[in-house]
Image (tube, rainbow, N blue to C red; front, side, top):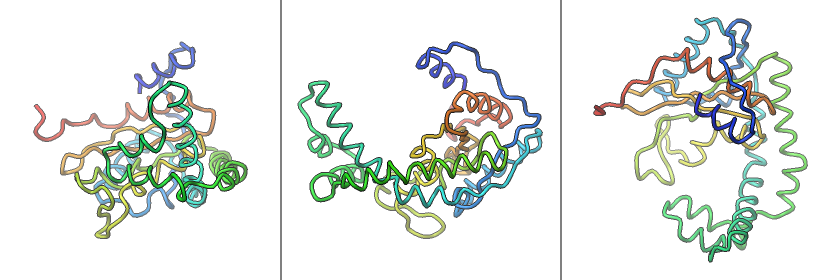
Length: 253
């Protein structure tokens, strides 16, 4: 977290030192619906242990309902992200004088699932501008209100949830992987929890909470309200100090 705080100070020009937030009176929201649904057993075990450590140290954990964030993200997130992917990459390539456009860049992508997604955004698969404008004008503001209302009505400074519903998938699980004994789309499943905050524009940071029995890392995401980036860093410094140190991965000297 100290490294993130340093980078933030360089980017923003604010050299003020960041100190861990005091644990006394710190209220953290736990959005059980959606964000904690259908977790891999190992992810659930490690993230629940992290909650227990925070509670034992004196943080007040508050159950909050932000399930609408998942719905609004599903309805609007891709219309925004995919439309802007094409527009912004084309602009970037042109401004830097690179001999590529978006289509050519997508065709050279080595990851099969990402290449398939990107190439589908050209031509008939392109996100209509009207859908993008609608998502920006109404969908995203509604998503931001869900987050802000959750913070305000519950008097919390941050929410905590598993960064991903499951640990890293095996190499080769490009299109689907397994969760709860069922095949699930790999990309959509891994971004499920982080996407709503990203689309809403609220600051978030993922902290390692431990390794699964197979030696795979699991993260706990901490998100604050929009505009509270530096307060999030202070909370993250505290949370990081309360979590157990990460063990070395099996087989690492």
